[in-house]
Image (cartoon, rainbow, N blue to C red; front, side):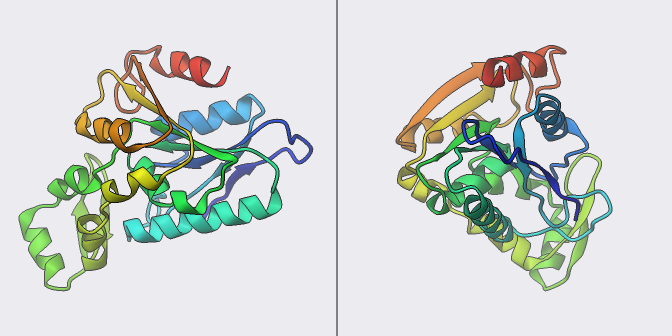
Length: 231
């Protein structure tokens, strides 16, 4: 799996941005691709997490719990190498839920920026599975399903159960890190995903900005976003 990382070793004054991509997020496309490119071009220290099944040439998807474990282990390695650096978790969409689920592994020198948050991934992702495919998976089969507009991946029962049993809401009040919640005004994700974060997170600020879910529309949405957050 490709490594997305560039960290300036002798720069303890600036943070390391730790990117957690969303559902089928890929560093070569959409919001995460543009965000990673922007950070690299502007000489920020970056560590990008990847998940099994999210690259273009991969087929079988990691479960949500495998993703959480991946985030926690990658963070632990990063913190071991850079014990004094601030780390800012940059999460998008489903990646927000994954990152928050791993929050008890993060220390006080770590904070979150949550872009277009998905807090209830089961309500967003599982309705995409056709009933016939779902019955096959529940019977024990691994099935190649169309799970986004253009992409298909192999899912199994462990993957389905990870969405049904994720239950992020019950642990949100335990998140002690500072969180900036960024919701685009034209996001198609139901606002309940943001509302519960505003209610439950102890140290949160809310920012609403122009844009759709991936900050592609209007044309200036991404540029305005990164200027506001990073420059």
